[in-house]
Amino acid sequence: MQPNACQNGGTCLNTCNGYKCICVNGWSGPDCSENIDDCAAEPCTAGSTCIDRVASFVCSCPPGKTGLLCHVDDACISNPCKMGAQCETNPIDGKFICTCPSGYKGRTCVEDIDECVIGTNPCENGGLCINTEGSFTCTCALGFGGTNCEGNIGDCLNHRCQNGATCIDGVNTYICQCPAEWTGPFCTDDVDECRLQPNACQNGGTCHNVHNGYNCVCVNGWSGPDCSENIDDCAAEPCTAGSTCIDRVASFVCSCPPGKTGLLCHVDDACISNPCKMGAQCETNPINGKFICTCPSGYKGKTCAEIDKCVIGPNPCENGGSPVSALQVTPVHTVRHQ
Ligand SMILES: [Ca+2]
Ligand SMILES: [Ca+2]
Ligand SMILES: [Ca+2]
Ligand SMILES: [Ca+2]
Image (spheres, rainbow, N blue to C red):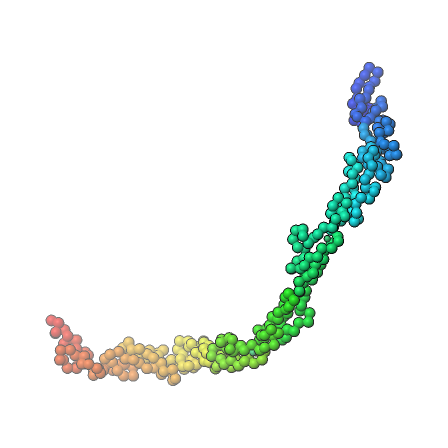
């Protein structure tokens, strides 16, 4: 057994005397190792070089010849393509094919392309197109530049915007974007904030226009540039320790803990000891902390402990009865209902 007895894909056949090889196309010899010379029959036209391959050949042509057997005249030899165009030869019939450079057309590339009439105007932003030999030029509209007028020329280089304004480029012009305090084409005019903004000063503040801004004069209790800040009247901790200070406008209120009263919660609340009797309502004098009892009908005195025998107002005794002590009224009513 010799696995490689037949080379180059040949098929091995066992025989009485040994073996024999059946070669694939292009190969010969006892073991198929000989490349058949496909150039032996001199297939290429005289003057060209034959190059042997496997079961084929290639003809290498001399200048001026083309085709598979170099039997065709190469038309590119006469330089038929103009304007620097690339020339290629059709390998079947030897004719030339010109690949034209930009700006030219036609079989030999001698015809100028009129870029101004084919397709859309190559000049942008309203530019005027002028055809030239092999190219075109653009005459741009005012404010535009570049080969195809594609660029907006910057107009902010020597702008006249004042007072820190921002220059915004336009077409052959520019716009000044003013800070809030200035107005006018070049931001040189003061803005009268007091006239344009009725609420420039808040909470009743008075507005005074000045160049480059405005000032607010605030009413009592307010501060800040626009009088919107409520001054913290609790900042100095005016209420007595243990109470809570509530800030108001230009004032404060002290919220007292049980047992304390007075504007600053500095007074002991006399109502804490329940001095009012007979269910009377107790109120505290916020100045000195003393109690005030509001007595129910029929009672009087500082603590409402005394019986009031003459209640002021219409006669409480109905049906012509005369005023008597409250303790004596009940039997009279009892009698009437019986
Ligand atoms: Ca042209
Ligand atoms: Ca511009
Ligand atoms: Ca102003
Ligand atoms: Ca305040």
